[in-house]
Length: 302
Image 1: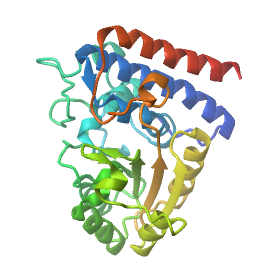
Image 2 (image 1 turned 90 degrees about the vertical axis):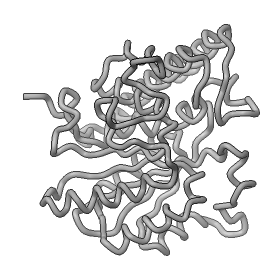
Image 3 (image 1 turned 120 degrees about the vertical axis):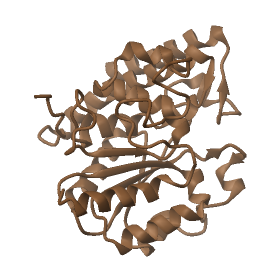
């Protein structure tokens, strides 16, 4: 029988943070390996949300690495299909695919296409990329599990702040509350950037004059809302613990609003002006990896 990856709630918080710090480093390095194979990609988003991915696969979710279709697994739905290189690095960290396969990212005949597709890659639940659809698919998945009598399985959905521009996202939010999908936990990556520029300039979703505007908006839709620094693993774990503790087959849905930094962990990428889709010169990739390692080792020394 395939081994089940259980949650890490039996460990103390600091041990969990330390383990996930290591995991997030490996996920980020996997992202850089993938990006280097093509010389470009949505690297900034993947680096920024790597802590979220590490926390989900390394701590919050139950699954079988050797059987990604195990019917009693928790599900992770990636609405942001262009974050595929993050998902693949997460699947490698989870043991679903080998790390050395990451070097085939977006190559001909690879199982790892540039935008994630469920028909190509083990562990990929949905074909993302048509932005604004992921949360609705999450509502349907949560309802389907409930109708099957599966009361312990959770559905996690990762989507981006740009998707808050889409009306379909808010229709899904209303539906989740109406159908009381308490087994649904959504995480939104608030990195502040989308294809056409800064999210705030395209369509403002935060109200500067009102504290906790986003939390209040989701709460008005009937959700349990939390907002955290998405690059602070302790804060992220605390929020996930609160959501999973309350999660049930029928109840209010949960959202964790995660403020992240594009290019996190690689200073030369954090400071770049054009961060949505990056072309990185061949000679820069080793520098990126060294900066990531220097930051990780420095954190470990502290």
